[in-house]
Amino acid sequence: MTQVDLLARYDQRVPRYTSYPTAPHFSPAVDAATYAGWLAAVPEQAAVSLYLHVPFCEQLCLFCGCHTTVARHNAPRESYAALLEAEIGLVAAALGRRQRVAQIHWGGGTPTALPADSLRAVFAALRAHFDLAPDAEIAVEIDPRNLPEDRVQALADMGVTRASLGVQDFDPAVQHAVQRLQSFAMTRDAAASLRRIGVRSLNLDLLYGLPHQTAASVAATMRQALELAPDRVAVFGYAHVPWMKPHQRLLSEADLPDGPARFAQRQAAEAVLVEAGFRRIGLDHYARAGDALAEAEAAGRVRRNFQGYTVDDAELLIGLGASAIGALAQGYVQNAARIPVYAEALRAGALPVARGVALSAEDRLRRSVIEALMCELAADLPALARAHGAEPSGLLAAAPRLAGLAEDGLIRWDGARVELTETGRPFVRNVAAVFDTYLAVGPEAGVRRHARSI
Ligand SMILES: C[S@@+](CC[C@H](N)C(=O)[O-])C[C@H]1O[C@@H](n2cnc3c(N)ncnc32)[C@H](O)[C@@H]1O
Ligand code: SF4
Image 1 (tube, rainbow, N blue to C red):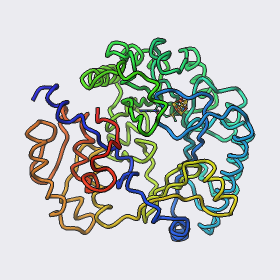
Image 2 (image 1 turned 135 degrees about the vertical axis):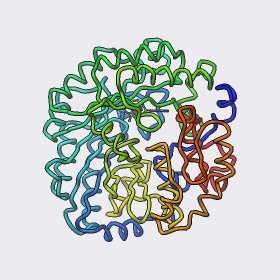
Image 3 (image 1 turned 30 degrees about the vertical axis):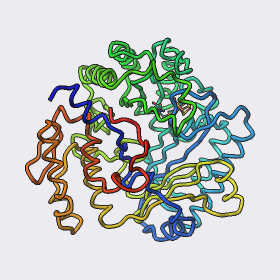
Image 4 (image 1 turned 30 degrees about the horizontal axis):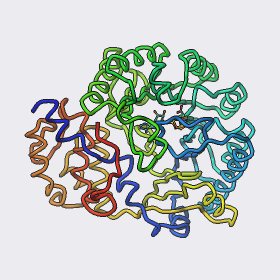
């Protein structure tokens, strides 16, 4: 099958599988009382990961698909930080102890949009209510355009070990089109500040599929990005979902590259990284040899969560902040996404939960298959079923569809084990979707929920 035929058949709308079931299947059936029960059942010895969401940015990039808002003044940022502190206290009370924490991830939006003193105050609340492991990984997402020295100091005081800088594209024509003006020097200075305060692992985010990008321009941006000596690079395909993010309508659809052009851009970025010795991690991450993510990939220990690919193997993730998602043994839970709703719950002394999903045994089994495919690009169906004390027959019902994928050259399939081929690698989400029993029914059926596959 030619590349064009493959794209025509498989460049569909499929989830990114940062969870299973995916977020469109969360419902209000999981509420604050459910979540409090789940937290109370967390085992004493369990180490948890914390995700803190900061939904503020200085300006809105037209492509942005994140939960964020533009806050022009400090007051809303300071009051949001106070809400985070209140939520930390409530969650710790529901846990009933100072739970051990192995990982903290600040995401957004732009976490450093919080004033330096607010960052410190939230971190102090974490220290007061949780038992931070001395070697805890502390990661933060940063917009290089807005990293004043006082924020760098706050990050240094908190002992940040890992940072991720948004780059997207260095081409001025692309930057103008998406309203994100960011010189190479700005990015270089931010990287230097973070290295200076001891950040060991530095990630850069790049995008393809933006207006005016070509395979050659994406490769040029990638080569420039490598001058910053990143440890990891994420190469995301621009998700154009204007029905969910109306500001994306300001990007002219006529200027957006089509499926084959997007595919060529992805491949061009990957070629530069592979040539430079980076190891490919799952769908869209790359890590240099020696980085923990590359080592985890070699050992089959990469995991996938809401932050993408990670070495974090904590079974419990607690989400803090508006729209944050947590993953507990019993299921997923998501906070209210709108700040006023999130604030109202906390002011009433309640956990600000909006929705979630409790996992069935079948969900857990399918989640393990989907995670194996997304992380290792392979899944041994009978072995995974056995590990879950289940019969493989449910998974093997997918055999006819798998045979079709094998015929199209995307996977090798021997009746038990699925393994992505080199051709199939960029289509791993389509292969994972075969095991998603929610996709054909419920809120996703016939609705443009997801971005395209490539
Ligand atoms: C929270 S931002 C990173 C930190 C900071 N806000 C920044 O932009 O520099 C997370 C990343 O998501 C990616 N992203 C944002 N909108 C996207 C979209 N519509 N499709 C794909 N990736 C997107 C960008 O690469 C961005 O760097
Ligand atoms: S890409 Fe980053 S800086 Fe731009 S609007 Fe989204 S979260 Fe904010």
